[in-house]
Length: 385
Image 1: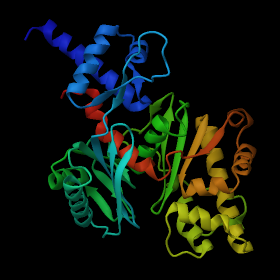
Image 2 (image 1 turned 90 degrees about the horizontal axis):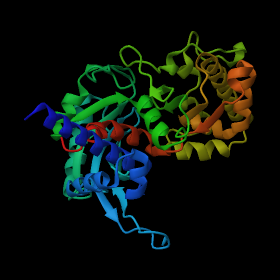
Image 3 (image 1 turned 90 degrees about the vertical axis):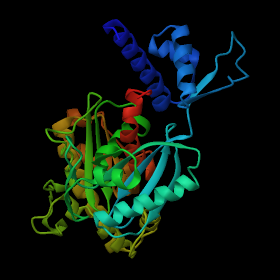
């Protein structure tokens, strides 16, 4: 093959990826809109769409019949039958989902399993086998992603440390790939959640974002600056939960020399609500109905400490939005305006004046969608690979 032929084919593959990424991230749109947004000519877009349709990656639908001005253009949408497996192991349960290329969680399962790598891998393989014969029959599974609450090395995806799971230096991607026959990628759960919220959720209109996720394993985070995800030298950036909290009133301290996730803590909220276990929705309802002074004070205490941590982040990074997920979103929703006011009071005036603090818009889907997005990346980069 000549260099020119190779170059032409490379450009075509890049253009296929651009069209597929567009309908994947921004939703169904007409060929005419794709032409305008990509800057490609109409005949090129028609050829690219036809190729993606033939590959089963997109489908074309009839245009809106109410729009009769000019010649109608077919609507191009990502296929509902192209899916990625998403895995989120936590201390209280293992969650597995199948996310379509259109961004919908097509099927999900949540199970209480052991915390060992062997038990998690075996459960994921069993769940996928069941779906292949049932809920995902006829679908093309392109790969999988796992959102792990711990330190994940960027170079090779090795989980260096997931303390609440008891994992250290584990090649989770290799184990899952061997057990399922699918390529797997691994990422920190909060970093993947940040990616999902930036692309599809609360931060979709923001280029400078701090995302904090509160889960059973603690508090993790992700950072986007100027539209770029920031992972740090080795991929370990965003461990907000391990920062030392600014506690203004010593009576608010519950753990001597503790870190943020020791003080702002899901288990303490469960105890305040009188619950042994609950998902986020159940916990939110329980906390909203509390009237006991001690329980209300625990919520207020955690909000005070969280506000100080967020103010430090605002001063250092000047985000336009902070997105809170998991139990942190529940703390926010107790009084959104009050938390924002507390953060602004503790932060410098200039970086705090345009700040927004929002709950994660994707709810319980955020980590699954983030993990699936990582799994879809090779397909979006080269749809014909």
